[in-house]
Length: 314
Ligand SMILES: NC(=O)c1ccc[n+]([C@@H]2O[C@H](COP(=O)([O-])OP(=O)(O)OC[C@H]3O[C@@H](n4cnc5c(N)ncnc54)[C@H](OP(=O)(O)O)[C@@H]3O)[C@@H](O)[C@H]2O)c1
Image 1 (cartoon, helix red, strand yellow):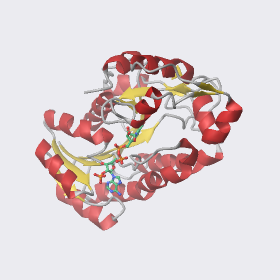
Image 2 (cartoon, rainbow, N blue to C red):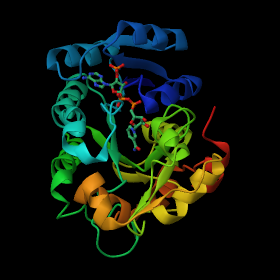
Image 3 (cartoon, helix red, strand yellow):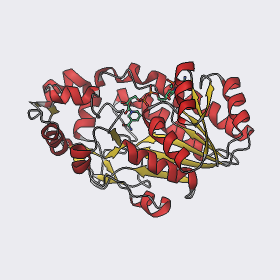
Image 4 (tube, rainbow, N blue to C red):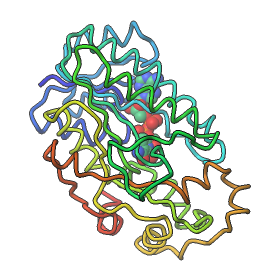
């Protein structure tokens, strides 16, 4: 198939492009940078240089590629450093989720694409009530902490725009927290370094449930969603949602770091804000049964336990 990947040079794109090429697809990758276009070409893809916020450029780029499937992996998270400044750190990503999505959906429709596969997130958006693990049927948080509201609205906008796009099979992939090569929880990644230096503490009781996904499993699930499965929403996570108080000490031990410090909630609130506290203590995990059943997909790392031990580096 002809596949157009916007965000072909990011954490997902770098693993997805070679996988899609090996599966025999013709891949066009989009980037803003001539240098990275060269890297895409060297990998065997067609490269196109365009800014996702420039509608005319995106429409022209997608039209030229004439893809059957368009994949939206646009984020601007490489400079993300501090949970405390969540709103401003996420502003560029949220623009890509709103305006960027609108542009790319319009471009896909104009080019006659059949299917549109987009990156969403399952890390904290589910409602912080009810059981610890959520399915795609469960509602997103109707009352998020104030500093998460704009980002949750942008995620919901992206999902609606993709699912409602006229004439396109819209597929929304709610990825769990990434780890592995090229991510901030991979060898040399900034969060792994914080954990190594005991600067990633358990704040409060650490009762928030996180669902992880190895970056190669992100790529394989995305390839499955490019190739098959009904339109709709899929959680793309491993088999073992786990509370922060469980996975964080395990990860520290797996990389030979000392155990994480504990910080009481009242103090943590001043460090990472009410929203950070909610992510650490109230987040819900996600179930992957639908993706397994409908996409015929299995994660190579069914549990972060094995993934943290064996899958952080290439
Ligand atoms: N679920 C999760 O846990 C999750 C999800 C996403 C990201 N992350 C993490 O966030 C960090 C950064 O992510 P990342 O490595 O994927 O980098 P990123 O800086 O978020 O960029 C992702 C992709 O979006 C493209 N892009 C951004 N703005 C664009 C624009 N205006 N027009 C066209 N393309 C645009 C980039 O292309 P160019 O720069 O080449 O133009 C790149 O291909 C990583 O540590 C990653 O693991 C985590």
